[in-house]
Image 1 (cartoon, each protein chain N blue to C red):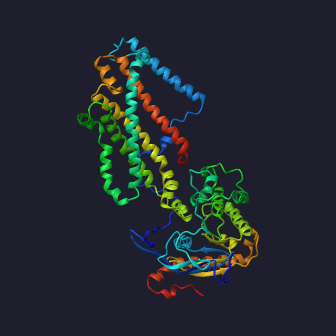
Image 2: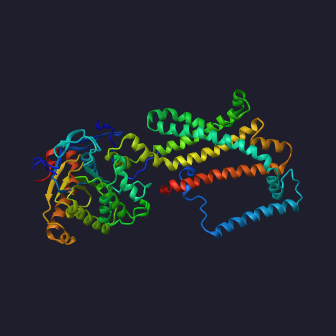
Image 3: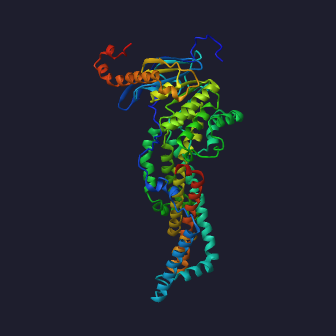
Length: 282
Length: 275
């Protein structure tokens, strides 16, 4: 019965693989774009004005045709003018992203929580997870469209397949962190395995889970847009192909602008969640 | 509290042996270690690094299963964590995602009990943490963290408090302060305390008895009574008695560090401590 005990160690949080990529070691939460003062905000806006104004000026000065590079003002105008037409497509993309990401994230989280409880099973499953993480799920979209038609289904599947493994691999890193002293603390009060999971393992894993969710959501966005470009008649990706084939460059860049705003919103969302719930890590 | 036989130790360790199975082979950490701790006593355990002090303490707490031997609390064998035994871990071991209040309430949460607010408030006041309940561990000094850990350990009113090198990471001034705090708490609660430390001075200042463990595999090599009345002042640390006792214990431990070689040669008798 005594065989399961390990030599007591303190304050050594063990991670599965020792090295965590910088993107995932929470520097994203700790040293992210923390804007502190009004002066910094002013400086950031000033730089933006100079860059955008400079581009505008240069494009006009050198008479660059709009199909090569539209002026920022033309893009802004297209954004407002065309937005009612783009909005439904934004809606489609968001539906794909949110539903696909939710499915992928839930499956990824549950799998990570379960698999890390069984080190042997984890060793067997790990290569396949790596395969899922590294394979661009976009490659499967034509196949999925053949199977499921041009509706939401193939794209939601692709988003889930792209986001799920990302969430899983990061969450698993989080769940693998073992602090034997903290678990011993809980056990000394007679905590059950379930209590240890919810009160020790899950909070310890939370920062890594948030990183996984953030990366998963951004991968999901990429995949959703890519999947829309492959085929079908709607979504922001479809707008990109349509506008570029019609050489409507201002409208094209307006869509790009919407996409980067989406990406930034995803980042900011998880950054704020991390700041609120996982700042103890930093 | 101790209704039965007065001779029944509060916490009795009989022939405790612990083998760890590691990747590099089996490791005998404790070898037939026996020790009685009586009710309301403060006993310190000292010994060379890696001699199994922490293993002994974790076994006494029921966190580790002994390979052989028994641990008895009030005469009844314990085989797992017991609500009557509180533990203070090395380096506070607070949960960083909880503020101090939530850390102190953690034991009640696990037990599904309502926190005893009056008692907690008393303890918090006793250790001088009033007004820090909303702070997170990283916002506090090491000494304050360890104070909170002591409150957490005492929150469920255990009759035995096991302390595993609780002040090892603190600077010496803070450590003296904490030692006085432990004595104060003891005078207040008369909780039986088993205290593990690297510091002989700390052990002498705090304890009724100092137990010296031999180098690995650990067993009880020697035992000293510390006769000073309580409350003790730091001045006793400057007396000749303490100085001599400190040196004697130091020689026991240093001697132990040299001797294991003889033991490896198989001459176990030489290894035994001089009487």
